[in-house]
Length: 297
Image 1 (cartoon, rainbow, N blue to C red):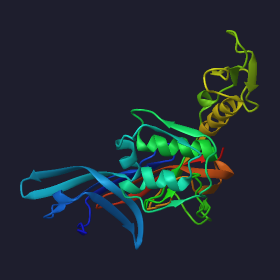
Image 2: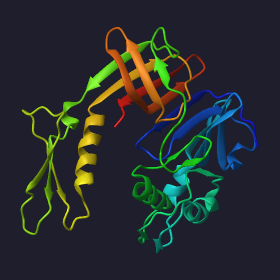
Image 3: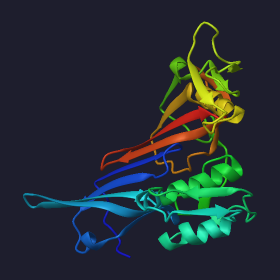
Image 4: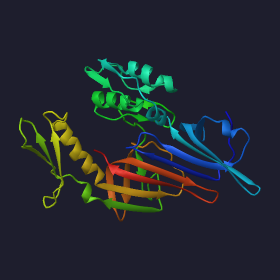
């Protein structure tokens, strides 16, 4: 493993709704760095990023030579690889892991080994990530997550500490901004449950303003949707309608999905939040972490 010199700049992004984290690091040229395949990032002794290198740029300007490396976390490998078409009946987690994850360098997963009682069809053109995602959504009702050190969490749950933000709390910040996005809220979903052209059943959003109409349609008869699909559309829209952005003047490398609270004199106090997005930037003069919090669904 080649130890890189102190970076000139670092940009790291992680988002709950995006499978792969990404990092771009620029540092003074060192011999052999062009031959690297993987990038590892540590916070002290803790491995917080592991990913395959996507791009290496060597730049010469006068006597100064720098190298910029861009990499995505392990989920990027699954996004880039096509899965072999097949159909699984009553597949267990170990089967999915051994056939679709282990060959790409994954060392372990967190989740039970009970089979999913049903079938999963892998169509031509599906990525390895889509296979994993379909399995987890069908079995657990949630999308999987891959931690910074490359462990697959099948049910998507993060069991880390609750991050408490506030001037008198564990994690301080220098600015806070709350956003109410009313355009995100779906007022109702109409379902087709009988033969014909009408979407006669209505699932209403009890949290929506009755004066504002934003409607969606779900074919529960032939389109593969269900009442559960309608409920998920509404709950997801409610979760996306409110967020808080915090700027922390230090590096905070937590997992997206971590539970969080905030106690702020201006925007108020909130429990039941989770870390939706992390953006860490650093250069030779300063560093900061921008944290986006959303309400748990």
